[in-house]
Length: 221
Image 1 (spheres, rainbow, N blue to C red):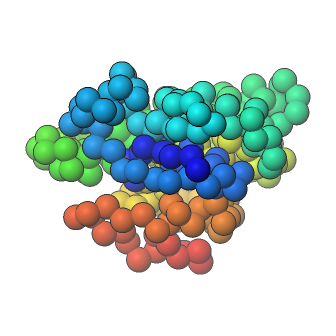
Image 2 (image 1 turned 90 degrees about the vertical axis):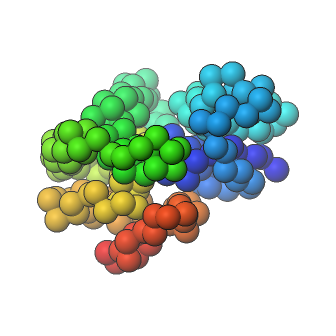
Protein backbone atom coordinates (compact mmCIF):
# COMPACT_ATOMS: atom_id res chain seq x y z
CA UNK A 1 0.00 0.00 0.00
CA UNK A 2 1.16 3.53 -0.76
CA UNK A 3 1.87 5.90 2.13
CA UNK A 4 1.46 9.67 2.01
CA UNK A 5 3.04 12.01 4.52
CA UNK A 6 0.76 15.03 4.50
CA UNK A 7 -0.86 17.97 6.27
CA UNK A 8 -4.68 18.01 6.03
CA UNK A 9 -5.12 21.60 4.79
CA UNK A 10 -2.12 21.64 2.49
CA UNK A 11 -3.45 22.16 -1.06
CA UNK A 12 -0.40 20.37 -2.46
CA UNK A 13 -1.12 17.30 -0.34
CA UNK A 14 -4.79 17.48 -1.26
CA UNK A 15 -3.99 17.53 -4.96
CA UNK A 16 -2.00 14.30 -4.56
CA UNK A 17 -4.73 12.76 -2.40
CA UNK A 18 -7.34 13.55 -5.05
CA UNK A 19 -5.19 12.02 -7.79
CA UNK A 20 -4.61 8.86 -5.75
CA UNK A 21 -8.29 8.53 -4.87
CA UNK A 22 -9.49 9.18 -8.42
CA UNK A 23 -7.18 6.41 -9.64
CA UNK A 24 -8.36 4.16 -6.79
CA UNK A 25 -4.86 3.71 -5.39
CA UNK A 26 -5.08 2.67 -1.75
CA UNK A 27 -2.98 4.95 0.42
CA UNK A 28 -2.22 5.22 4.11
CA UNK A 29 -2.22 8.81 5.34
CA UNK A 30 0.33 9.91 7.92
CA UNK A 31 0.07 13.44 9.23
CA UNK A 32 3.51 15.03 9.31
CA UNK A 33 4.46 18.03 11.45
CA UNK A 34 7.13 18.99 8.94
CA UNK A 35 7.95 22.29 10.67
CA UNK A 36 9.43 20.32 13.59
CA UNK A 37 12.16 19.09 11.21
CA UNK A 38 12.13 15.52 12.47
CA UNK A 39 15.34 13.77 11.30
CA UNK A 40 13.40 10.76 9.99
CA UNK A 41 11.22 13.01 7.86
CA UNK A 42 14.20 15.01 6.59
CA UNK A 43 15.76 11.75 5.44
CA UNK A 44 12.64 11.13 3.37
CA UNK A 45 12.72 14.67 1.95
CA UNK A 46 15.71 16.88 2.77
CA UNK A 47 13.68 19.87 1.55
CA UNK A 48 11.51 19.40 4.65
CA UNK A 49 8.22 19.76 2.79
CA UNK A 50 5.05 17.76 2.30
CA UNK A 51 3.70 15.88 0.46
CA UNK A 52 6.00 12.89 0.43
CA UNK A 53 4.66 9.74 -1.19
CA UNK A 54 6.05 6.22 -0.74
CA UNK A 55 4.85 4.06 -3.63
CA UNK A 56 6.22 1.31 -5.85
CA UNK A 57 9.32 1.04 -3.69
CA UNK A 58 10.13 4.72 -4.20
CA UNK A 59 9.97 7.80 -2.00
CA UNK A 60 8.81 10.87 -3.90
CA UNK A 61 8.52 14.56 -3.06
CA UNK A 62 6.92 17.61 -4.74
CA UNK A 63 3.25 17.44 -5.68
CA UNK A 64 3.71 18.27 -9.36
CA UNK A 65 6.17 15.48 -10.20
CA UNK A 66 4.21 13.08 -7.97
CA UNK A 67 0.99 13.71 -9.90
CA UNK A 68 2.80 13.41 -13.22
CA UNK A 69 4.30 10.08 -12.07
CA UNK A 70 0.89 8.78 -11.05
CA UNK A 71 -0.50 9.81 -14.41
CA UNK A 72 2.22 7.96 -16.31
CA UNK A 73 2.32 4.86 -14.10
CA UNK A 74 -1.43 4.62 -13.52
CA UNK A 75 -2.99 6.16 -16.65
CA UNK A 76 -6.60 5.20 -15.94
CA UNK A 77 -8.65 7.19 -15.36
CA UNK A 78 -6.63 9.85 -17.13
CA UNK A 79 -6.20 13.31 -15.65
CA UNK A 80 -4.17 14.68 -18.56
CA UNK A 81 -5.54 15.14 -22.11
CA UNK A 82 -4.03 13.55 -25.21
CA UNK A 83 -2.71 16.50 -27.22
CA UNK A 84 0.39 18.54 -26.43
CA UNK A 85 -1.64 21.77 -26.63
CA UNK A 86 -4.22 20.51 -24.15
CA UNK A 87 -1.59 19.14 -21.78
CA UNK A 88 0.12 22.53 -21.87
CA UNK A 89 -3.11 24.22 -20.80
CA UNK A 90 -3.54 21.79 -17.91
CA UNK A 91 0.02 22.38 -16.74
CA UNK A 92 -0.39 26.14 -17.10
CA UNK A 93 -3.44 26.12 -14.86
CA UNK A 94 -1.88 23.77 -12.33
CA UNK A 95 0.98 26.26 -12.03
CA UNK A 96 -1.50 29.15 -11.86
CA UNK A 97 -3.08 27.70 -8.74
CA UNK A 98 0.04 26.21 -7.15
CA UNK A 99 2.09 29.35 -7.72
CA UNK A 100 0.06 32.53 -8.27
CA UNK A 101 -3.12 31.54 -6.41
CA UNK A 102 -1.12 30.00 -3.58
CA UNK A 103 1.09 33.07 -3.19
CA UNK A 104 -1.75 35.59 -3.42
CA UNK A 105 -4.55 33.73 -1.63
CA UNK A 106 -3.88 30.42 0.13
CA UNK A 107 -0.69 31.50 1.87
CA UNK A 108 -2.39 34.67 3.07
CA UNK A 109 -5.57 33.04 4.39
CA UNK A 110 -5.08 29.38 5.32
CA UNK A 111 -1.48 29.84 6.40
CA UNK A 112 -2.22 32.98 8.41
CA UNK A 113 -5.45 31.77 10.02
CA UNK A 114 -4.51 28.13 10.66
CA UNK A 115 -0.85 27.27 10.10
CA UNK A 116 0.54 30.01 12.32
CA UNK A 117 -1.49 28.81 15.28
CA UNK A 118 -0.76 25.13 14.69
CA UNK A 119 2.96 25.86 14.35
CA UNK A 120 3.02 28.20 17.34
CA UNK A 121 4.12 31.16 15.22
CA UNK A 122 1.81 33.79 16.67
CA UNK A 123 -1.26 35.57 15.39
CA UNK A 124 -2.44 36.20 11.81
CA UNK A 125 -1.06 39.23 10.02
CA UNK A 126 -4.15 41.34 9.28
CA UNK A 127 -2.54 42.91 6.20
CA UNK A 128 -1.96 39.48 4.68
CA UNK A 129 -5.51 38.37 5.49
CA UNK A 130 -6.98 41.49 3.86
CA UNK A 131 -4.77 41.04 0.81
CA UNK A 132 -5.83 37.39 0.45
CA UNK A 133 -9.52 38.23 0.85
CA UNK A 134 -9.18 40.84 -1.90
CA UNK A 135 -7.14 38.65 -4.27
CA UNK A 136 -9.48 35.66 -4.16
CA UNK A 137 -12.20 37.75 -5.83
CA UNK A 138 -10.00 38.24 -8.88
CA UNK A 139 -9.20 34.54 -9.04
CA UNK A 140 -12.84 33.49 -8.73
CA UNK A 141 -13.70 35.89 -11.56
CA UNK A 142 -10.94 34.36 -13.70
CA UNK A 143 -12.28 30.87 -12.99
CA UNK A 144 -15.77 32.06 -13.93
CA UNK A 145 -14.42 33.38 -17.24
CA UNK A 146 -12.75 30.04 -17.98
CA UNK A 147 -15.88 28.09 -17.09
CA UNK A 148 -18.05 30.35 -19.24
CA UNK A 149 -16.03 29.09 -22.21
CA UNK A 150 -15.34 25.51 -21.13
CA UNK A 151 -17.05 22.64 -19.40
CA UNK A 152 -14.08 22.22 -17.03
CA UNK A 153 -11.22 24.59 -16.25
CA UNK A 154 -8.85 23.34 -18.96
CA UNK A 155 -11.33 22.04 -21.51
CA UNK A 156 -14.15 19.58 -22.06
CA UNK A 157 -12.91 16.97 -19.57
CA UNK A 158 -11.97 17.06 -15.91
CA UNK A 159 -8.19 17.16 -15.50
CA UNK A 160 -5.47 17.70 -12.97
CA UNK A 161 -6.08 21.43 -13.36
CA UNK A 162 -9.49 20.99 -11.74
CA UNK A 163 -7.97 19.00 -8.88
CA UNK A 164 -5.30 21.65 -8.32
CA UNK A 165 -7.93 24.38 -8.12
CA UNK A 166 -10.25 22.29 -5.94
CA UNK A 167 -7.38 21.45 -3.59
CA UNK A 168 -6.82 25.15 -2.86
CA UNK A 169 -10.48 26.11 -2.72
CA UNK A 170 -11.40 23.19 -0.46
CA UNK A 171 -8.73 24.24 2.04
CA UNK A 172 -10.09 27.79 1.93
CA UNK A 173 -13.65 26.55 2.21
CA UNK A 174 -12.68 24.69 5.40
CA UNK A 175 -12.19 28.10 7.01
CA UNK A 176 -15.16 29.75 5.21
CA UNK A 177 -13.00 31.98 3.03
CA UNK A 178 -14.74 31.35 -0.30
CA UNK A 179 -17.72 33.49 -1.34
CA UNK A 180 -19.68 30.90 -3.32
CA UNK A 181 -22.32 33.51 -4.13
CA UNK A 182 -19.86 35.45 -6.28
CA UNK A 183 -20.24 33.10 -9.25
CA UNK A 184 -22.89 30.46 -9.96
CA UNK A 185 -20.71 28.79 -12.57
CA UNK A 186 -17.79 28.39 -10.16
CA UNK A 187 -20.10 27.10 -7.45
CA UNK A 188 -21.63 24.57 -9.88
CA UNK A 189 -18.13 23.47 -10.92
CA UNK A 190 -17.09 22.96 -7.30
CA UNK A 191 -20.31 21.05 -6.57
CA UNK A 192 -19.43 18.63 -9.38
CA UNK A 193 -15.91 18.13 -8.04
CA UNK A 194 -17.09 17.91 -4.45
CA UNK A 195 -19.57 15.14 -5.27
CA UNK A 196 -16.92 12.81 -6.72
CA UNK A 197 -16.01 9.75 -4.61
CA UNK A 198 -12.38 10.91 -4.71
CA UNK A 199 -13.37 13.92 -2.61
CA UNK A 200 -14.78 11.95 0.33
CA UNK A 201 -11.52 11.80 2.24
CA UNK A 202 -11.00 15.54 1.85
CA UNK A 203 -14.47 16.28 3.19
CA UNK A 204 -13.87 14.14 6.27
CA UNK A 205 -10.74 16.05 7.34
CA UNK A 206 -10.70 17.50 10.84
CA UNK A 207 -8.07 19.93 12.10
CA UNK A 208 -7.83 20.13 15.88
CA UNK A 209 -9.01 23.52 17.12
CA UNK A 210 -10.52 24.42 13.75
CA UNK A 211 -13.92 22.80 13.19
CA UNK A 212 -15.15 23.11 9.60
CA UNK A 213 -18.32 25.08 8.80
CA UNK A 214 -21.58 23.16 8.42
CA UNK A 215 -21.59 23.52 4.62
CA UNK A 216 -18.06 22.14 4.18
CA UNK A 217 -19.08 18.51 3.71
CA UNK A 218 -22.56 19.28 2.38
CA UNK A 219 -22.85 18.27 -1.26
CA UNK A 220 -25.88 20.53 -1.68
CA UNK A 221 -24.26 23.64 -0.21
